[in-house]
Image (tube, rainbow, N blue to C red; front, side, top):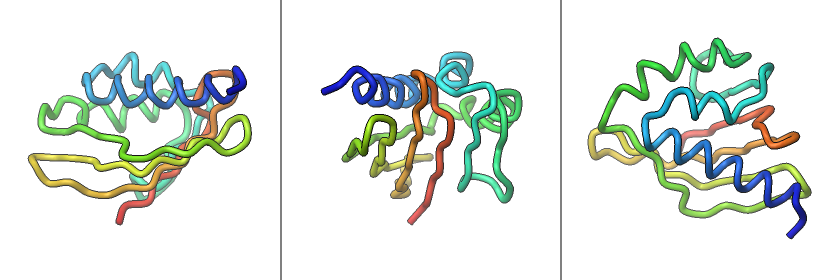
Length: 113
């Protein structure tokens, strides 16, 4: 496994760990300053300030968590994950793609089942 692939997988795992710990600062720190997240809001979320604003109320919910059931690495920077996002005991299957550049998530796209 090359360092860039390992870095991509470790970055996605750090993002997941921060999400599950409800640690907003650590969560946002896994994203590049100009990162884009699609699929969780009607419009793309662009930049760490917008990511922080969107996820702050969500990460205050102690009943919210996520489990990656399967993850596949493509090339040196893409991670595709099958996730279960759990809120108040209800799980929603999500497919997430992460484009990791220089150890930070540049783009995340989520598709809920």
